Image (tube, rainbow, N blue to C red):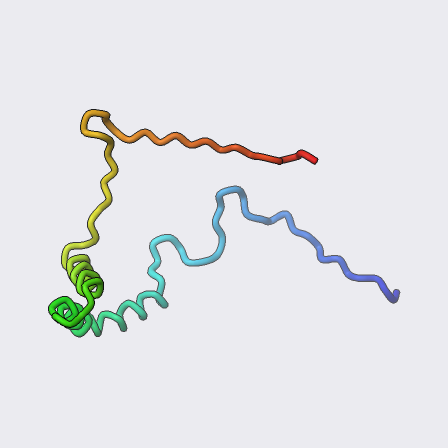
Amino acid sequence: MAGTAKVAKSSNRGSKPGERRGGRQKGTPNKATASIRDAAREYTGEALQTLVGVMRDDDAPHAAKVSAANSVLDRGYGKASTVISGDEDGGPVKVATRIEIVGFGEE
C-alpha cells in the first residue's frame, strides 16, 4: 500500500458557539504579568524621584519636564478621563458612520 496516506479521524466534539475551552479561567491572575509587576514595583520610589528630578531640572528640555510632571500626576491621581461633549447649546455629540464598499464584485 505504498503511496496511501492515513487520514486523521475527525471528532464531533468541538466547542459550541460561545463556549471557551482551555486557557486561564476567568478571574485567575496572570502569573507572568504579576511577577513582572512585582519586580517593577521595587523601583517605584527611585523612578518617582527620577521623574521629580527631571521635572525640577532647569537644564532639562521643556518637553521632558512636562512629560515627567504628567507621569508624576498620573501615578498620584490616575490618568485624567476624556470627556466628549457637544456644544454648550447643541447638546451631546452625534456620530454618524458611513461605510461604502467600492469595487466589490466588479470586474
